Image (cartoon, rainbow, N blue to C red):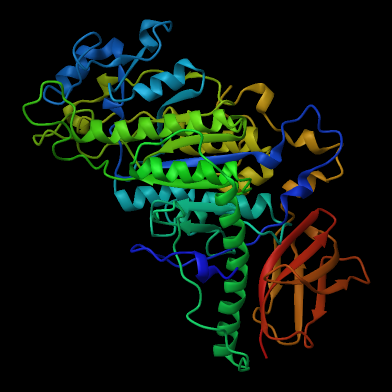
Length: 547
């Protein structure tokens, strides 16, 4: 089936940038009876764009009077009052008890069922407070320091590149993005431009799409020039995308939803994700998005003492959509396979402004959902005594760096090694890595995956490790390509694959060493993947051969 025959164009269509991966059946191995099945594990990232007001989402009950004095016009009613805040867990000590926004009844239900954890005070050092820059920092693994302020690739993309560095071909994308026509910086890898398929819009039949196929049959004669190389690259990408589209279409048509969802922006996105998962799609990372959280004005309705309004409507949509998603997965016995996480670029000030709203702040809570999540609260109530006029009524203490949240999930959920985490997040703290700095008990022990799960399997642990970085030059090349590995790793062989995963040539290294040259003068012009086998595992590079 050609991609253009079944993928619709929508008003927010965008361009695909694709990266193939290897078949996940390779993870199957003997002797894994005591380890969780990594094949089916997925993460769904829920982006709350615009900066969610964390203090009206999670209210410190023990400091309600201080909260009310900071927000006399937009405060939520206390427990027991009409539309009052919801006590999330009355069994906690009073100093730890929090009130949920009254619109978050679905969150309360998930928490009571053991499917939700709250992580308090999440942020990063030296908050930028610009929507665009702070969003980029959250997606790249950066912070407000000079050293980590201008990263050009995303932590999701780096994770996918390093974790699956020796996986080349597959019929599905590693990442899928919904709800935004712009390709997320988070999926940009160090080598690949984008590691996700962007799907936007909804057709009446429920299939979501972004692009059309080529506007006609591809040319039969490709000129031997830079222009010809670009034409061939487009043709190859089109062929790879057709394969992805076929798999996605089959998964969508095979999958189902067990319950009706609200007809809202976020619910439609999660409904589609659930249907993909139900249909067996093995995509590992999903990103969905709900915008509108930049509530400078009329965060609450004017002259409404219940203080519902714009923010309440957003949280209602979030709560109902996530609740339906978790119920749907559980009804289909898929709930053990998926972890979902909310994030927003920053929080809001503790003090209200003069427009029944809040201005840009720093920290905010993060919510984590799933059967595998240990329910509860990580961290303590924010300290409202920090919010004084001298600092602009800001709550500034970061209890949990957002990179700790995601690195904990990547390690405990996917079994990612310390080395791969440090590569994914650039080992941002004093060169000590992530091994002893996870958020404790975020994932239930029976769902935790560790690299030791694979030591007795048919797979080497190096499947999940990236070998030392290689320099491959020249690129583009016409005759010889030289491979030079760092740290004296030994090269065993190199293989050349087309973009659709076909083996073009294999070069066995006649001598052990960390430098090797291969002759490609008989290989046609085009774009290829070079897979390099070493004594520490394997890695791949995209290369161009040009005549």
